[in-house]
Length: 419
Ligand code: PMP
Image (cartoon, rainbow, N blue to C red; front, side, top):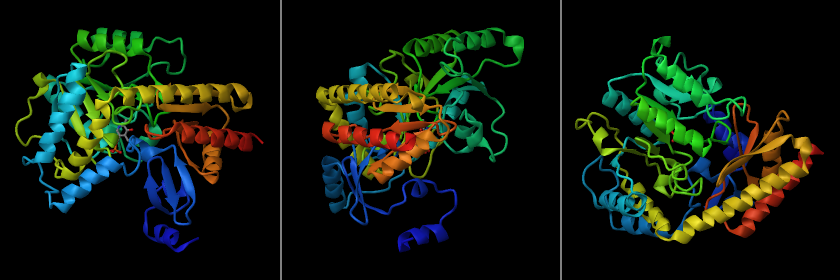
C-alpha cells in the first residue's frame, strides 16, 4: 500500500467506501477523465455521484471563478446581498424558469442535498399544518434524520434508530409486480380516511430513483400522482437532487411528464463545478417563512453562485439539450444490446436519459463488473438495495468517442465476469 492510502487507512473512519471501490489516489481531472498519481487515465462514468454533470474543471466556470477570486470577490456572506447571488437568481429565472413557464420562489437552505430535502419537508408541514409525509419504496433523500426518514431503504436507516414516525412508505411505480397499480392503493388509502392515517402534508419522490436502483417512474404514473395530490390537497415534492440538471435529458426531470411540483429540491450539479450548493424552489403562495425561520451558515457560497451561473449558460443553446438526448439514445441502445447479447447476465435495462444502468439478478454481478471496469480504466458505481445495478452516469458533456470507449470497457468487463 502506498503512503497516501495508508494515511486514509489509519486516520479516516471505516465508513468511507469509494477509496475501497476505486483504489487509487486521484490527482487530476478534466471533462470526463480522471488521472491517478501514476498517470493512469480513467473515463469517468460516475461524475461525482451526479455532482459533475458538466464534467470536471469546465474552462468557462474555472475562468469565472479565477477572475472572481483574483479580484478579492467576497466568498462567504450568509444571505447578504451580493452580485454573484443576484446574477445567479436572474439567470435561473431567465434561462430555466421563465422559458418553462415555471414560477417558483427560491431559497438556499444550506450547502447539500439533504439540506434542501429537510427544508422542503419542514415547509410542507408549516404550509399545510399537517405532519404526515408519504415517501416511496427505494427512494433516497439524504442522510440526516428527516431525509433519512423518508428514504425508503431499511438498510440505510439501520442503526439510526426509529425514523420520524409520521412517514408512510408506499410502493413506487412498478414496485414488485409490474402489473400492480400502486397508485390505486394510495388513493384508496387516502380516501378511506378512517383506516389509520390522516391526510399527509406532502409526498416526496424522485422521478427516477438514483441510489434506489435507477428505477424510472412512468410518465402516466407521475401524472396520476399529481392528480391525487391535487384532489387531496397534498403538496408534491420532487427531489431532483440527482435526476435534475439535465440527467434525464431535460433540465428538470419532471418536464417530460408535464407536471408542476409544488416544491423542487436541487443540489449536486446545480453548483456546476462540484461546489456545494442547494436550492429549494416552491410555488410563491407557499412562501410563508418568517425571516430567519429556516437558515444555515453556508447558504451563501458566492464561489458556487459564480460557477452555477456560468453552468446555466449551457442551457442558453438548445443544441446542448439535443446533444444530451442524442447521447442518451446511444446509451440505451448499447445497454439493450448488451442485455440481449449476454442472457447469462439475467439483466434488464433501467433508467431514463443519462441516468441509466443494468439490473442483474445474478448475485454480486454488478459490483464485479464495476470492479473489472475500474481495472480497465472506467469509473462506474453500483446502485439498488442489493447493489444489483451497475450505473452509467457520465458527465453530460462526454464526447461520443469516449462514450463508446466506455461501452467497450463495460462489455469487456461483463465478458470477464461471466468467464
Ligand atoms: N436526494 C437524492 C435524490 C440524492 O441522490 C441525494 C444524494 N445521493 C440526496 C438527496 C442527498 O444529497 P447530499 O448527499 O448532498 O446530502
